[in-house]
Length: 146
Image (cartoon, rainbow, N blue to C red; front, side, top):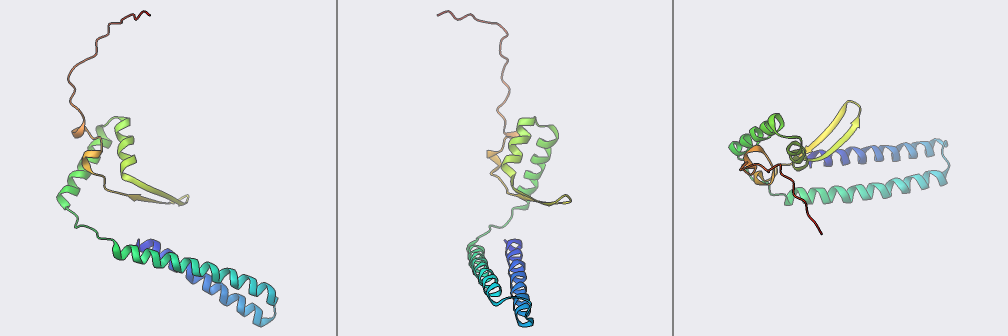
């Protein structure tokens, strides 16, 4: 949440600096009044949108009631994830990643941002939560006639 708010602040700062550059160009006579007015109005509208988005994020952050992290439960979950990734089947690994990875943002070739979430441990198929293996299917074939 903090990073998103910081990103919005940076965008808003860039937009304000752009408005200042337009006014400087207008005052220097290198920009026509109509063009300056149009661009400044567009940027001001965008600034209002970003401010509303920032206010919404601030309100969400204040409403956010995060529970204390249970370090023992977190360590156990990390161990289970490591065990699944090391010895689990491909479907188990895929299911685990779908439950844990919430969002992936690729900024450029060298920068990737991954957002994780902590799933309910019983909702993830890890070796400890699999049904026990109780028997085998027979290899016999049956013919069904209709």
